Image: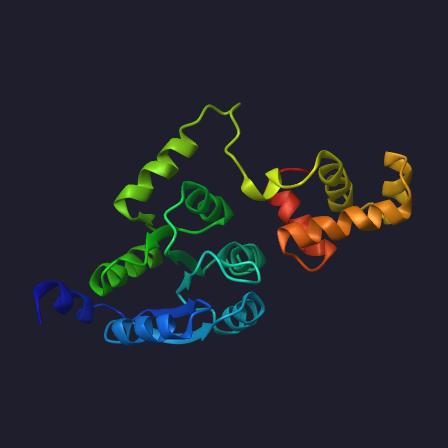
Length: 223
């Protein structure tokens, strides 16, 4: 055992939860990390991840960014306020700037790519658990560039950008607690049109109800 491995073995074993929709990848990560941390659970869908993480309250959650039902950001937005002691570390094949910035804005404490070695990943998990921010070297520049932007220069938000102006108006009123009838009156459109806009927003943002939309809008100060 080298010095790095010995040092890791001497430290408290952290409880880690793994979210990824590829079973073989989860199995590989579990096998590699099992020497240093306790992988207390795993999930392949957002819904399963949210319910199991809420029940287990692990120290650190490893999140895949892209999954068919919403991915890491959806998990983060469902849990970060209700479970502030759980830390989230994105572990993704993607090194796209918009993915990195989106996950950090949603509350992740770090972002590393799947090319990371098991030893480096274990160290990253421990640093995140200790409250540090961790990024693969190339990705750190994306975050610095984004948050160094002038206050009046908004950081691109791919999810928000896919909504039309009218959909944003409906979302803003919905987040303020307006009923469909009230939104229709405010915007001079029919209730059926309001329902269509809400349905489109839910589909585009991959959410299931108005409460998730309201929380999402509040996080972005759209209310």
